[in-house]
Amino acid sequence: MHDELTARQRAISLRLAGRTVKQVCSALGCSEAWFQKWWRRYLETGPEGLYDLTRANHHVARHIPPELERAILSIRRRLQAHATPATRYSLIGATAIRAELKALGIRPLPCERTIQRVLQRNGVTAPRVRLAPLLPRQEYPGPQARASNQLHEVDLVGPIYLKGSRHRYSIWVGKDAFDGAVCLRLAGSRRMDEVLGFLGECWKDLGLPEQVQLDNARELSGWGPAARTLSRVIRLCLHFGVGPVFIPAGEPQFNGGVENFNGWFQPRLFDRRFSRPGDLRRELARLQEAVNAQHVHPRLGGRTPAQHRRGLRLRKLPAGFVVPTARQKLAAGRVTFIRRVSPAGTVTVLSQSYRVGKRHRGLYLRLVVDTGRGRLTAYLNGRVLKRWPYKLLNN
Image (cartoon, rainbow, N blue to C red; front, side, top):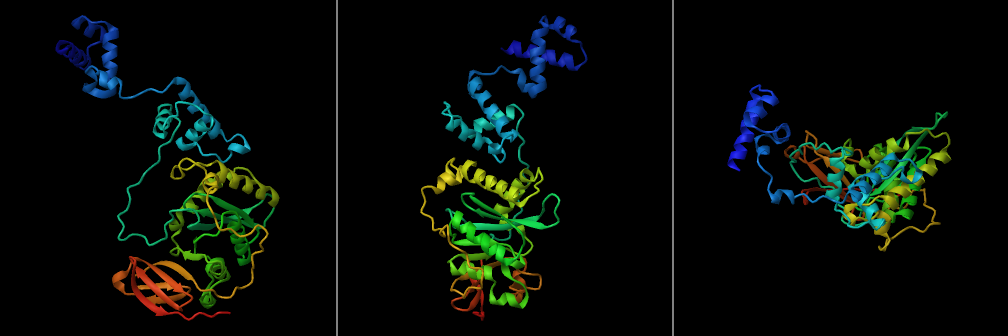
């Protein structure tokens, strides 16, 4: 073996020195096929490629049957084509492919990493670009979801224009932060009545959450001095025992689950134009059904949101319930605002400013309005930082 390795190294050295292939083979008394084999190994892996592969290396990578590999690639092409309404909003990753293989009863069932290797080997996958994470000064004090209906995230997509119309429409999106179930509704305006109606429909479909996370739009939190009375949206949430949570102003990334979903579905939904509201409503219903009944998630054990929710006891509004749009009597509850301390050492809640100290500038505080006790409490890293009386107008 030592002489063979020396011959290989000598052959590569002569070729690198400018000798032709025929001259190298003549000098070493070897065939051109032998030289081409080791030259190719050298180009692929460098000097290490001139060593023989051991039996152990031959058995490290287990090759799946060619029939299974063809099945994986065929399923990927079918899902990626989005050729039919049933596959228009299909996921195309390893998790979705494995779920379809399992549903077809194909054995042996490969793991997700094996499917990813097949896709990479055949050049039909694009790896994600991962940026280096920033080092946080503190842990973000937002709510966490460890079960279905612990947290819903709500956001608005729009304005949307139909073909041949100047009327502005919007899409309200509700998403369960744990299991990924969604609720989608088309709205003809951004008025508060539309928001109240959407929340009612969402709570009929998905159930009443413990908390609902919102941004700081006027139709949600109110505006100006009148915001102190608490908006109809906040009052409706408290009426049904749902705790509203408002993310930091101007930082939509903290509503990331629903924001990511919005970025995913918009190019798929709007790759064609809609001329009538009814057409768009039907397409939204199709999208909602696909996400809830077809998309499988690793955290759910490879099940869809609909399959996961089937065995749960969820508190829902009755299907025939009419959501009140009038201002509800103020109920006891907690309204949470997550705010970043300004350079001046202040935070703003419902158009009012509160001083917490410059030493906390740049940090995130959790500010909770307790409507039952009539006070506002600022929490830093889970501990009470300051507390103020907060008089509410119950009208």
